[in-house]
Image (cartoon, rainbow, N blue to C red; front, side):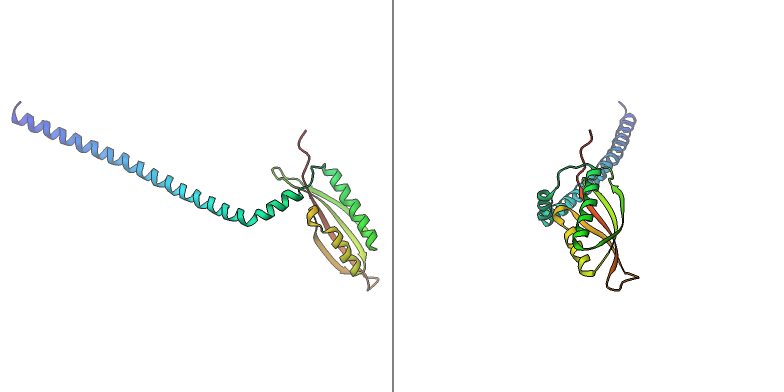
Length: 177
């Protein structure tokens, strides 16, 4: 082999080596960027998991309370009827006059564990009777509350109050048949 051929061979070998290095550098650079992205995502997931763990410690007692007080599954119509009957009975026993009742549509969005039966009542009576009525209806252990209360003075009797209230009962729906 002549010296010119040797130089040409060395030149091509060097050029090939440089091209391979450039290609390998580009490949390893993209691999490094991908590894850095995956590391950042893993760190973010770790931070999120730590936040969930910290918050779960804070709400553990609430979760236990909810598990202890969770109602048995029931049909929407049954819960709505029982809620209406309870509101009527408690209003009558508190000495209130029921002016109107309006069952509201049940909140039953897909994917939610609890649904809400609602009824809107307009009652009239004395202030202390209204407070007794609300006290009997608002029972957290039974997942029942007056969520909207609107008070206005009675136009005919200054000693009475007109009250429009929305009473809601959270319940677990029956599983699909």
